Amino acid sequence: MEGQPHPYAPTDLKLPGYAPNFLTQSTIVSVYGLSSLLVVSLIWILSGRYRKLAKIDRLLMCWWAFTGLTHLILEGYFVFSPEFYKDKTAHYLAEVWKEYSKGDSRYAARDAATVTVEGVTAVVEGPASLLAVYAIASGKSYSYILQLAVSLGQLMEQLCIS
Image (cartoon, rainbow, N blue to C red; front, side):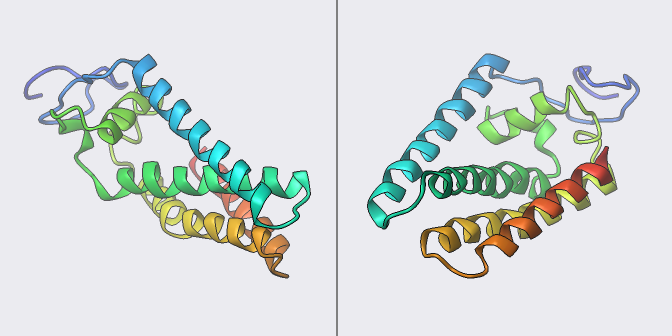
């Protein structure tokens, strides 16, 4: 193996050019938590001004915005940045995936099934989740079936990569 040893299991996993994290785990989690709180708060406030929505609809909008942006941004970066583990610039999203891979090395190893499932999640479920926010806000008739379809897709993702 070239360069610095990596923290992933198995230890013989080949990751040429691996660069260790620059950000601490607490920094990564704090940034994610605060940005998520900001998004949820913004959606909650805006949904209260848009039209008369029930609290459950406003909560659903917060959830779908949170999950949609997570799929698009975090998982999208993973899918389209195959060498994130080499990043030496402290790019936040690369740091997230280097840290996440400590718990599941299939991500650092670029396991084909994992990349495929995450790709579908980022490209299909992310935008569909944001469409659900719009559908709930505007009272579209397809709102419920869309939420069901995305939820079933997320369940299938968990079954496929578990």
